Length: 113
Image 1: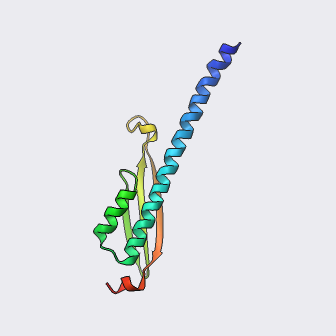
Image 2 (image 1 turned 90 degrees about the horizontal axis):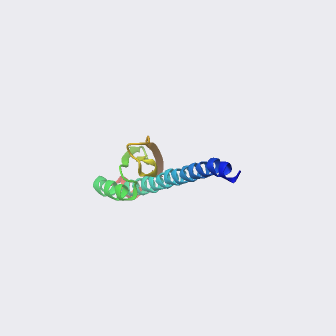
Image 3 (image 1 turned 45 degrees about the vertical axis):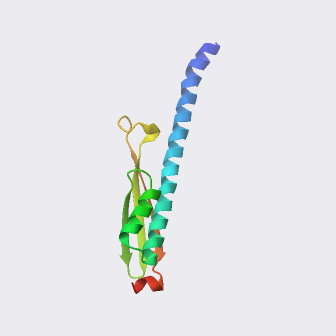
């Protein structure tokens, strides 16, 4: 009797564990994108050079992340998008894409630069 329950229960536990790890990977990538977007928006709002904004944001973003910074009137927005390959299986499983956006007001001293 125990063998049948183990044969059904063990794969279910393994699948639940893999799904939990995959969920943590997606959540961690989302948080890194959010941090990178916030950093990029703050630096751009202060009037830092675009190359500095991009290099610092890329260092904070997940691998393969793409940064877009836009300025409209007195607001700067930064969006970071990155692929997440679940469980490190890039070719076997489809990749998720996570995106985070941050908006900051332009600092008065930055507008005159």
